[in-house]
Length: 337
Image (tube, rainbow, N blue to C red; front, side, top):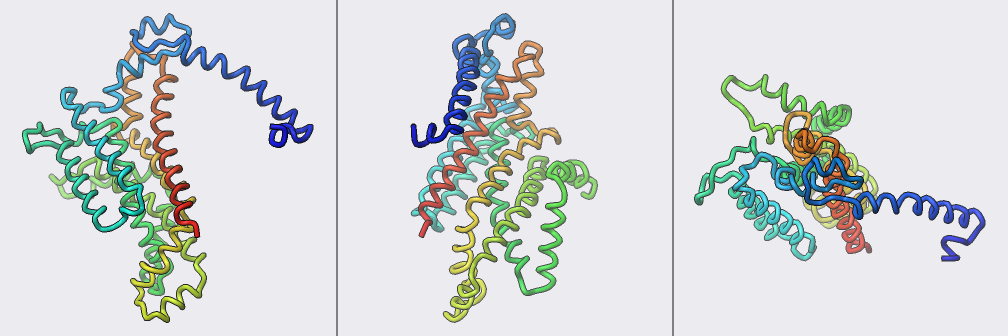
């Protein structure tokens, strides 16, 4: 403690000042959040209490998590979420990164789609318009990140291509997409895109939002990957050519493995931002985790307890972002040479 906190007069004063601020802030917060809080009460009882009203979460937990999905069928999105988390945990081990993992994901996602949509095996059909809450948030984020990453790699390779047409198209796409906010992309997918479809033809609203998120995130990933490609010494390209490898073999076996390893930190930062940006779909009327929380707070019984509700969903978003960040650090250590 002396070496790290009190090794100079300035650091000693700074340490004491921080301890003083924590001593002033933490006791009232813990009293409000835990000791004087209510966990199972009505909104009327909460309004008379001096502490936090966590009852707004516990009393509406199923609606916040599953939204307008049929109440008696909430076990289906719960099973789908657990299966998705299981797939992610199963994929963390690099020893399983082979073609068999692709089959596992395809089968797992197909099973989750059947459970959520229904219509077969005696399951009641549920239209996608009623998919909401955390299941919709995970759907948009997981599929968005999975779709944006390979597209971003392809765009990065296209921008460095020697073919003028391919290079120009990649540059135009990247610069145009990076020049507009995600909100405008979502509005275009929700409002403008249907105007160009023939009469009587519609595209699912969730699918349109998913495509917008993929296209937007891919442009940023492309620039990060391009930086990794430029960091590879020219000698690596020449050594691959001297072995007689064609373009696809050079890129797949020599260049990309090194480039993607270099850009793990900025890539994960973009993926974390994309995960949080999925909450913007509330502006086009999709009931994700944030929207179902807002609907709960619109109930007069729970008006005024937005702090507790938003702290809860902030915790869920933090767990998702921290898990991605923790996995990236672990992956960096494994790939360190």
